[in-house]
Image (cartoon, rainbow, N blue to C red; front, top):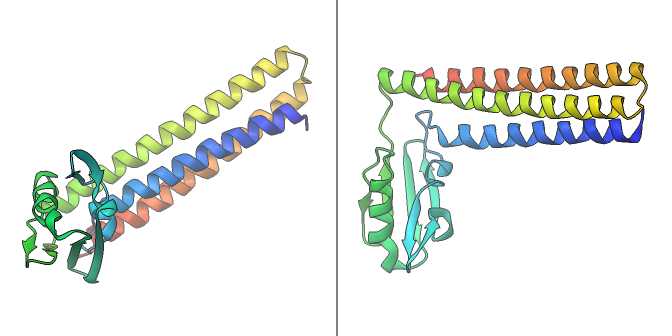
Length: 187
C-alpha cells in the first residue's frame, strides 16, 4: 500500500488504542466491591496551596479485599487528605489512627450495583464514540488522498481495513464491558 495510506491506518490504530487505554483506566475507578488503590486516584488534595493527586502525597494500599489504607508521606497531611476523601463524594468515611487513614469499603447494594453498571456502560459508549471518530478522521483522510490521485482500489481497500480495525476495537470494548459488568453484579 501507499505510504500515506499506511500512515493513515497507523494513526487510526493509535487513536483507537489510546481510547481503549483511557477506557480501561476509567473502569478501574469504578469499584466492584473490592478495594483498589485506583479508586482514590482522582482525589485531589490541597498540598501547600496547590491541588495535587492523592497518590502523589501518600501511599495507598490494600491490606485486604475490603480495606484501603492511605499513609501520607508527611504526617501533617492527614487532616487534608481525610477532608479531600470525604469531599470527593466517593461515599467513603476514613478512620484516622494518627499515622494513616483506614477506609473500609462497604459492600455494594443492588441499587448501587445497577448504578455502577450504567456508569460503566456510559464509559464504554464514550470509548466507542472516540473509536468511531478516529474511523471518520481516517476515512476523510483516505478520501482526500483519493482526490489527490490515490487509486480507487487502494482507497476502497484502505476504507475496508479501517472498518475492520474499528470493528475489532468495538468488539474489545464490548468484551471488556461484559467482564466489568459481571464483576460489578457479582455478590
